[in-house]
Image 1 (cartoon, rainbow, N blue to C red):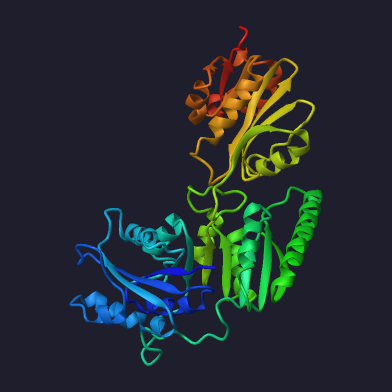
Image 2: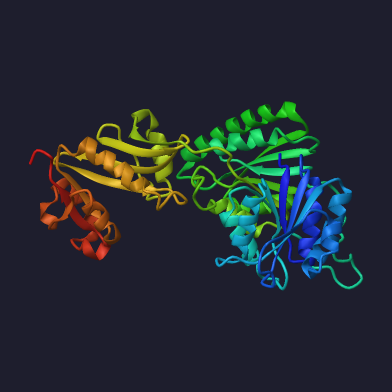
Length: 440
């Protein structure tokens, strides 16, 4: 699964306990113990605990003590002391991971001097947000008090880290990559495949989503069954991150394995998906955040009427739009087959309107809305196009040749859609815009 592990440490009890998890990572044979300190003027490296122990550097001596257990477990351990980067300690950690070819970052969710009401330390949070490799974030309940376990000694745990794994799934491509990832595991007791249904529109929608979830989970369960231990499906409703953390405790999971990106937040070079970030922050057990290992395929095209249900599912995050095959042409951006950005051209008796321009959270500021509207204008721009823009989108539509026009220039059937504004479109942050046809 992961051969080279980078383990940043600030020598807190949290970090010392975190180090012990390295011996439980399947396939791990090497570790880099890193301490970032302003006392260092340059990066210094030692290739054994003996070298680090004999160094005049006090942090190196502490690293040697921390790494002894790993060397005894057969790990090849490298010891590093480095100065922080201008962007912060997290940047030095990420640079070390890249320099050393690490494929997993093992980091404590908190460090020295953390407050009990802070869910995840600042450095850990930034590492989780920006890492481009797998990240295992540890969580422990409380600091050992006087007379309890000594610093650097792992707390006793009833079960191994990878024994009872909760795996949130959303049936996107990332889900199937995660299933493949699990194929490298041996000896687990149980994998719990959990799907959270976030929202439903009505009873029919509930039945449809529930049936789909049952069928998809059954397929994944059959796929994993021959590979090892027990596989159990689980369906819940509500806030995904909250339900995942709650069920991890209720099911007594030892680990949460979550993909860095889900169906609504998947872009390799983009920020971490919102669900993964929230789970890493709020969980009370270790969280392994899986990073995708291949490049993403992006496709911009018109959506066929058979796919209109996918458009409606994406629009469920935006005003519950509905698609009508008799009057709509819908265009979308697909990332590895997942629909992430939309724009619609709807035909009314007296004109065409662009609306439904929406990009999923986690994919924004990547040019996807511009790409999909550009295709729409190219395909539909032979006729005059109208739109009701919000104030912040005016310049966006101007870049496609739209101009602000008086409300009376809008086709009557389009104006009727906005009767709720009671004649005050600007008060509703709506501004009529028009793009003349290519023939005019």
